Length: 492
Ligand code: BES
Ligand code: MN
Ligand code: ZN
Image 1 (cartoon, rainbow, N blue to C red):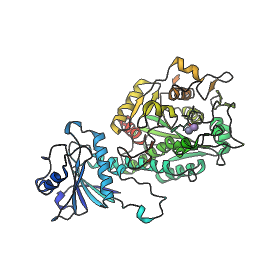
Image 2: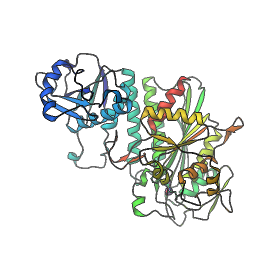
Image 3: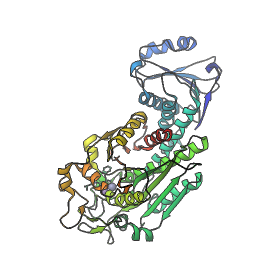
Image 4: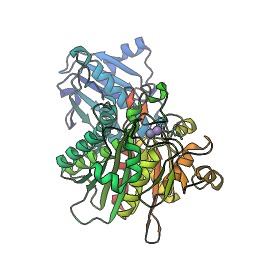
């Protein structure tokens, strides 16, 4: 999609459609010429301007074919999340009505960035595997924004396209994305934007990351480890590490999943896809001259496929992890924490100022918070609060769950090893998984590195369209909050 700001009168726009926003029960902000034309249609359709309500009106006498009036809902309730949601609906509608070139009149009350994000997110379509032309819908190709902040519009586009990139990766089936091809995709991304990247082959993983190896060795495509780096031109003041769970498919392994739980487990790489999405955004922002100037960003991904096989790891196995701790395997389906353990150790060895991991880690987190909200955990409250602040701005819902529960810690004790990969009870499963991860966060300057864990098992996947997700499938959750956080940190 091509995106530009429009600095002339909307009446001179040449294209397919012009969009105006309106608040519920108000029409006073609409230009007189527009109001005259649309009023009878509004009355006929009983259009009130409720949130997400969209009215299409054909017009004559202009160099565009139609006008859309989009309801934002009650004026006092409008915020960035509402603007993004309504813009997404507008984008989707424009596309469905086969408009290719449109002008959006942004209002001063709605944020340019949120609006721009919404349009790009709402027009997303994963139709790569459709072979019939008619199933590939028309695309909204050119969007102009009037009364908008150009910088914010372009940043919004970059972030939303990065999220769409993550969505594409999550949606790509596991016979196409496996640990090997995932590493290739990371390499291509790095090469495209000039990022440094290290890809460790299976031999290295077998020697250096026993946990990642154990989980992935039952697959005919063996695990890979990926370390990608963004460095600003000047020396960075801060080093931030992102870690993503990268199970290209999670069958459960020998503790095989029942059919209804195995379907959609291509999404078990969503954390890793979000990490690559962050780098996609950094690359595009770099081109715009808007990338962080004071922060070095590192991405760490352990890519593996959890499969049952004669060579698979088993329940009862004991793994001596990269940091020397021993893990007794209680269930091969609690594999994410084992892969992440070694990757978090490796990330810690690079001595970053903080670590943020994103993982489709537990079904228990979805039970606790529902499918639209991620669980956030951490070892430093101030850090968690800062991240939650950005989650409000991005509209990616997160809710804090506790970590340091002495009683629950009992649950992951093992009789014969340092720790077990499965709780003695199902209760508090998201928390015990997070506590397991904490065992692998290293120290810097004599104290544990500030760390956040985001369990995205719920919001990484949309079971139906909602908000700015127009399609069932991968959501790209986590990309924009991370970027909002990086922008904020870059200022400090
Ligand atoms: N990848 C799953 C978690 C998951 C579940 C993600 C649903 C997205 C949607 C994870 O590897 C897993 O299988 N977890 C088990 C852990 C259990 C065996 C302790 C779970 O949540 O059931
Ligand atoms: Mn699993
Ligand atoms: Zn998994």
